Image (cartoon, rainbow, N blue to C red):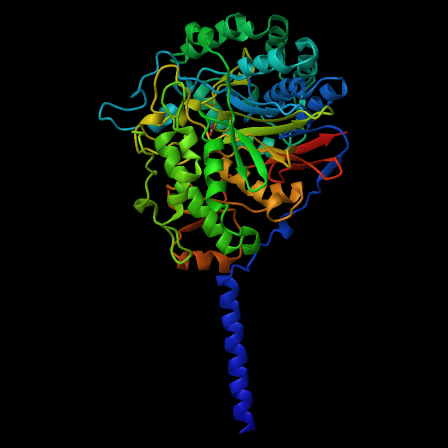
Length: 577
Ligand code: GLY
């Protein structure tokens, strides 16, 4: 009898344990194994900080700040220093977006996104049967959009800078002349892409030489280009000797960019997307980037749910974020493009009234299928490699800047004479409705190619205020995953109490409507969680090749100090004083 009672008790305890385990999963108490991945400590300083993808660039930005410059002067120097020392994405023949907030609380957004050339046409990447020739928008001169970076930095300098431009560019010219340090990641990448550089350019170049970790790369051609830009200003790039060399080079490679295109290029000051999430005021990039609107939609979708209690990277948190992302990316594909060409219902897309109903068909019991979900209907209303840096100066000005060539080394086209790579931003257009771009993003008419139109972006440079004061600056590369990486980093600090370094280092996941899968960083999430999500109807994938962002950010601590987070996934470095 005693044995039977013990046996029954053992069965009861075992089944309770099993039930508890099941409940733990059901209640989303299984947290991702974040800690084993975290190897860096937050950098904490008193006055000013630059966090970027390369130590040389962060140091040059800080040098400008120490020499009396402000965040906007440091932006110009950091952007150009990345073009020298981080050529995979740093650029002068690409484009980007900047969000700023001055010490007085004035906010603004600069769009220096590339544009389609005047001779671009809707079907320029389709063959005679109307089929998309995908390589044409990705590699070589036809993939290049009219570059915006030089216009962007001069627009910033003119409006908000304080030091003479020659003083700002001088240390960058010195960097190009004396050379930059090649990290292991960089050496591997250049080796990986060497065959592609040779094939695209049909010639040897600085970047087809043999390199190893620790080498110093001197780019004298780029130093000379920068000297001319320093002496002659913005016009050097869009009208001068450099502009003419760009056009000659691209046209010799069967490109269509002309002097007329360069002459016509202007960076545009735009109103940022501003919205609240709980007691945070978030300031992010407006179209032609989808970043701000998608970030706003996702945060507003999840606001009613107590995700803090669900836990960081718990299955319940993953479900709610996934479903919110699914719906926001569906809207992105239909509504968003260049605001100078299409009407975008910006206010409506982030209004409580519109967003309220969009999560109605979500249940924790079962995944929503992307096939069953389209963009929302707005009454009356009929798209990896990039780099981000954040700067805060001693005055309290803050900026978030994301800049890109699109793919790694852009179109792979490299001018030996000028010393830089050209973007392949044309691939961010929707070349054919329903045809995915290199990030798998599907677009429609709103993002179709038109002459002089800007292609839709996902770049999400973002500033956050808390209690009316500046609190955080952040952003990331990563194509379609930019938005969801920025989102998770804000939540990691705000909801899950991480410090800035932990927040940028924590494992991430991503969903973008189509393809209807959740992408997880490999070996970072418990198998039990992934299995549970599969049972609920989600397709999950852990794929090494997928970039889930390299977030760089700075947060103001309650004691007023600056805390920098530089993503462990790259060579990113926070420098401050
Ligand atoms: N080229 C990536 C983006 O702008 O989203």
